[in-house]
Amino acid sequence: MKRRRRKQKTLGQQQRHVNRRQRFFHAVGRVMFIGILLAAAILALTVFFKVNTISVEGAMRYSAEEIVANLDVKVGDNLYLWNKVRVSDTLMERLPYLESVQIRRRLPDTLVVTVTEGSPVVAVRTEGGYRYLSKYGKVLEQNAQSGDLPTVSGVSLAQVPPGLMIATGEDAHADALLEILQTLDAADMLDELRFINLHDLTDVRIGYEGRFDIRIGTLDELTYRLRFAKTVIEEELVASDVGRLYWDAQDRLHFVPDTAENVAASAADIEPVNDPSDPNGT
Image (cartoon, rainbow, N blue to C red; front, side, top):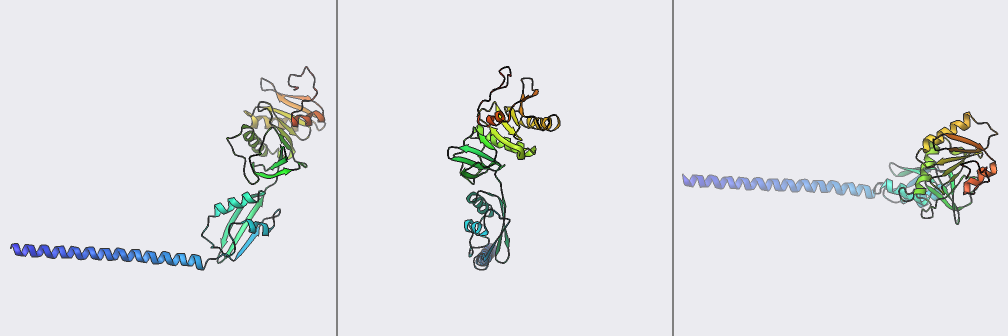
């Protein structure tokens, strides 16, 4: 009886051993199969999917050749083994006027690069000239002439090279500029902007239509005050009116007639000659 049990036990151990070996070889087979599939996929990517053509759409300021030359993907490179977001971001830094870049793969061997180009909306005064900014706060150009662009005074962007956006949270004046640009754009007022004076963030001044010096004060109620000023200009004032708009301590808007020269002088924090009895004349 004992001998029979011992024999049964031995047969059971052998069967378990055979099962373990079978499971081991099955596992090895699966790993080898997956490895073969991966090797075939990598071989297909590296051998068959090569960039042969790069086409560019939407470019005007930059030529297609410039865009291709600054792209981190070249003819002969793999069509897939790179990051589209990183390549797009790098291209927008190298070519500052590019506002957006979309890269599409078109099988079997083509890349299509579609770009949109931004426009400068303000010129920020610096020691070497002006820095042009887009409405989104991207530095487009440095050491440029102002031309007909609205000017910005009271903020320094010397640390921001062309191709990069204004960093938020590092400079209160730069943050104020970005907030004002976005608010003006939302209120459809950018086209008539003439200047932004940020020398004093408690006395922010915005030139509008070449006729008005809008004294915003702080930015606490920027959206409301800009929209209210625009409504008053369009509905209450006439085309011959020139002057200064400001809010008193009771948050009431006032219009004080002035000269176009004094309005323009407010752009550079040059104090105009005003009536001494006017409490908001300086």
